[in-house]
Image (tube, rainbow, N blue to C red; front, top):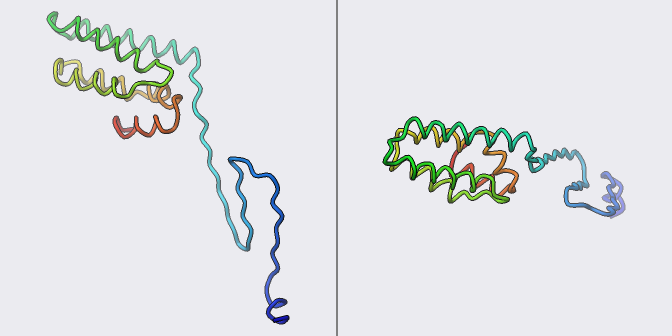
Length: 142
């Protein structure tokens, strides 16, 4: 038993406080990597840019949608705006608006889809948390 005890490396460790993002490894030939992505912070500049994007989308609706559907289409854009800018963005409403345009106003559907999948909209969603961002990617791609 003594020969066995002296034949290999001796490894011991004393581990103190470990935080949520800590990594601990004890052994030989260990390689560790750690990645962490912070929840993005939505700035005042982001909010202003998003507002400009909504104004541009509404202008597109005004130009491309027939008068009979224009009021309803603009109401859906208002719903989309509330959904995107909520403290926790409402993906169900975003999906509903996308589908509504696809079904009722296909001429403007691509503009709405382009809006929803825009990186700035994704940033607003990601600010709502990792789980919400993952669901957004599942529903809308990207």
